[in-house]
Every structure is written in C-alpha cells, then in structure tokens.
Image 1: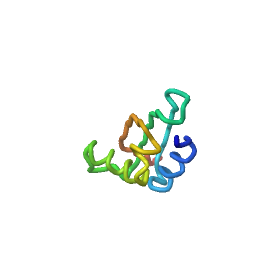
Image 2 (image 1 turned 135 degrees about the vertical axis):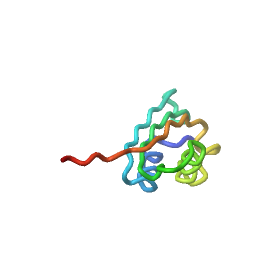
Image 3 (image 1 turned 90 degrees about the vertical axis):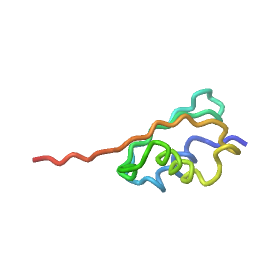
Length: 82
C-alpha cells in the first residue's frame, strides 16, 4: 500500500521539528518521492548519516510502504539579525 505525502511529512516533521522540508510526488502514484530536508540536526553528520537519520524517521516504512525516495539533505542555518 502506498504512503501518502502527508504521512511522510508528518513523520519527518516529528523527527526534525526545526527543518525546512519539501516533498514532491515524482510519479503521482504515492510511491515515488523526492524530499529535501534542511535541519540543524545534520550539523557534523556525513551525508550517509543524514540519510540514515531520515530513514529512521520513516519508522521502517522505506522499502515497504514507501518504494522510492530521492533524498537531498543539508544543514539549515539560522541567521541572527544585528
């Protein structure tokens, strides 16, 4: 059974509350997505570690309910105003 975009976003926002998250359904089938996640939680983490954190946030649904997810991850930096 495919995983709706709103469920993916909810799981990611629970794990990365500070993040800028953008998700696209690439095929219109609720099964092939691209997600961009920028979070301060990725500071000091390699790209592989960042992606592992995302997969963990998806609670084991990757590869079963969620067939394909292209990931772009990075650090969201907050800027102070002087």
